[in-house]
Image (tube, rainbow, N blue to C red; front, top):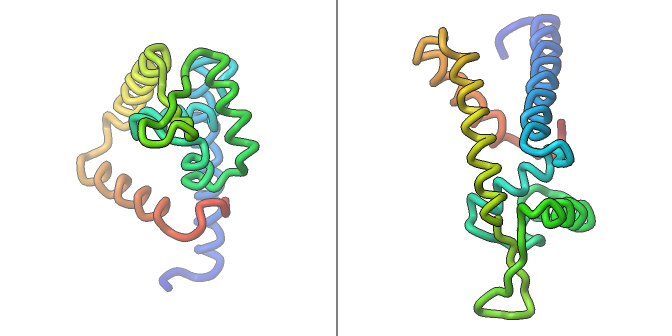
Length: 149
């Protein structure tokens, strides 16, 4: 691998610090959606919306979260009126989570705000740099166990 061990360690330190800053901004964006809505809940709501509904067990499996964690987050989303449960049409014993109208609107508003913030932050970046950055993020997020941070 290119670079000395010292150079690699320095780069890894910068990456860790900057990903932590990135995560803080993501949590702040989630807080703008609703002050009582933690990032995990925001992420689950976005996933439910993207999938046009899903089961809580699907969320737990996808994000590698404990079922009780997902249950608490879903309870918060329901209490805030952002998610509701519907029986699965093929098996009425199964409950499928769906975003409410308010949940969909809240997501759309927050996503528009986030997109505008990214556009502003990255306005001076050449298209090549944006493309490389997107490729690196895809590569990073698809490598290894996502629970190791």
